Image 1: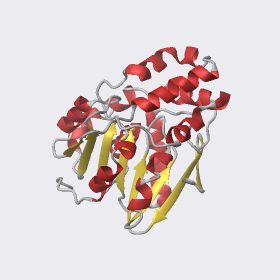
Image 2: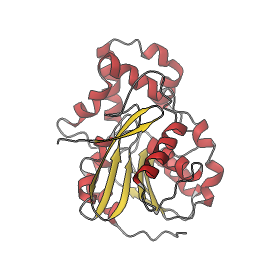
Image 3: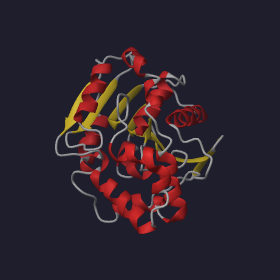
Image 4: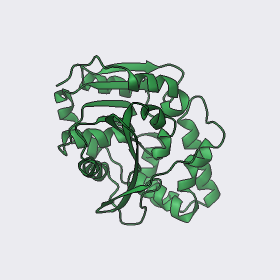
Length: 275
């Protein structure tokens, strides 16, 4: 599929590239790491049948600018997301966020003054102790990993991506996710963004989670090995009125493992309490 982001938005750290499709009530899709808006290639066109859908690549990811010296912390991503929402002049959009996109959306809502119509989080970084596994190793050894031979780096990233899916990737998809992180520039960008993502940026808003009043839907792959089910239960405990839906037979990437079920949740009417 030819996935294009034809629009540009200038941030203090560089250009963020974005696209819009469809018509109707606005909905914004926020990706995580080590992915890009390509993650939404099957979801966005379906939603665009009835909604105006906005997608973008975070700074340092995909087709957006990637270079040394960028602030790629969750706090910086949240500020850029809030700037994008202002640029788009959206009247309280629906927001859907995955992986670190969850933390970006929550910071924008709770600390940056953004306003949403409703929020869907799935297999998302939100708070608690999530510096674990390979991510924790990268935080500790980023300088060493930057020096890996290209073939070893590619094998590491590929295995990490495979670990995120329970059903496996369709032909060509793994290569598309890998491509931005290969070569000297891509390898540097991979460890640059991971080494700046910290629990401290989610700890700052954890005490505000129980004050969220807008409708919140949580969806989680029962087989998620990146953020296993206890992370969903933790978040549900922090936002008690949120709906929690388990997706059986799916891992961290619902977009790959269960796109039809994800679409059903994104198009279903929420029963959660709103404000």
